[in-house]
Image (cartoon, rainbow, N blue to C red):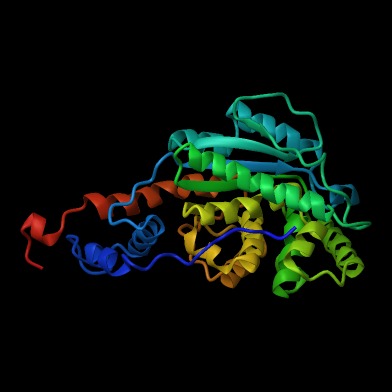
Length: 344
């Protein structure tokens, strides 16, 4: 089942005019730093000299991982479902930050190993009750992988049809840092030690055990190298949905806000499949999770913030969103030298 997204590079027809508009604002050239390049990117995404951010939203994909039974996480698998309930009750960090900045928050059950109660903010797209243990067999088969990819794309299309042109993605899944580490290692060639970290809080002994387990999995699936095969072998349903979501958002020319380590690993897969997806991405922050800096280097990314975050959930996106707003607002509302009658 081949993927059929169409993702062109960003339009360049307005690049010169956008840069001229930025340079004519009442400020020294380049004095707004990274906000200026961000304003240029937003304008190019929308192919407009007056870009607007409409109905920003964050979609959290949640799923469980069979590898947890090998003891790679500091928390039991049941915490995934419990945290989904926390998101929906409004008690999680992302819930607080999304409310603060008027960002719509939705949660997608990509593959939680529980029967979740219905809720207005919860979307049931369950591919299965968690993936298989990739120590023994691929985490998902090809059909499940494609189903999850399409489900992620469908969620983005729905938000776009509702008027959103700015979207970010979070994740929740006990054990997903193990999946992400293997995906990153296999697709970049960087050492496992650079890719695998403490996740949700492993101590030294637990981290050592995690590394041993992950190396065993790598040895078992040594021949798997193609991006979609790697995703199916080591990924999670929520990670596969993230990949599909990124690709659909780029196809729709939406501005895509990137969170931390797990979501950046999903973006790495999307980039391997469609390189121009990066043109539409804004990296909210650098996580303190092991591997994220190296991963950002692989993606040639320049994040907006460095706050030592390592929570996931899309929390970095919500915190960084006001900076994205500021970039669009100065482009649209800041006076030019001519308008203010100020000598250049």
